[in-house]
Length: 104
Ligand code: HEC
Image (cartoon, rainbow, N blue to C red; front, side, top):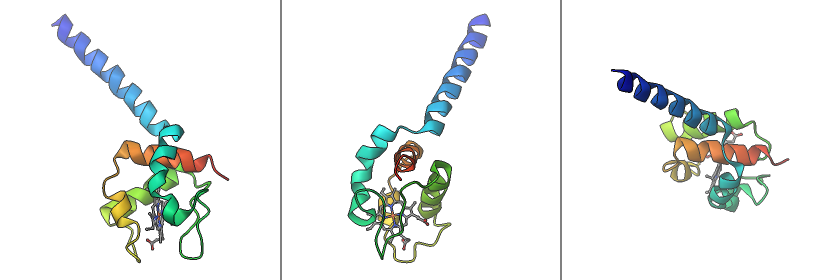
């Protein structure tokens, strides 16, 4: 009985810890993932006449946008984003968002 409680307690703490990492996002990993984004959004995320700038975007807002494209909630007018967000995990999105939030 005690062991069981202990296991639940440990699992609970681990879940919290994982949540904290997720919420923060890993900017270094985001930089690696961003190789898929630079073709359109540019090396520094500044975009061009066809592509919106994503540099300096608030991380929470960025994740919200990516999730929006993935779920189809945001209509992807030119169908440019869909392919690139389709395979992203929540962690990938958090990492990408953390990285782009570090840019000007
Ligand atoms: C093939 C070109 C292309 C690639 C690659 C691409 N994007 Fe985009 N992105 C666009 C276009 C174009 C838009 C504008 C909306 C639309 O028409 O799809 C956009 C919109 C966005 C937006 C919304 C910006 C806003 O202010 O509304 C975000 C955030 C974004 N992209 C992030 C990313 C990330 C992160 C990656 C890499 C995983 C990526 N994009 C890869 C072309 C691209």
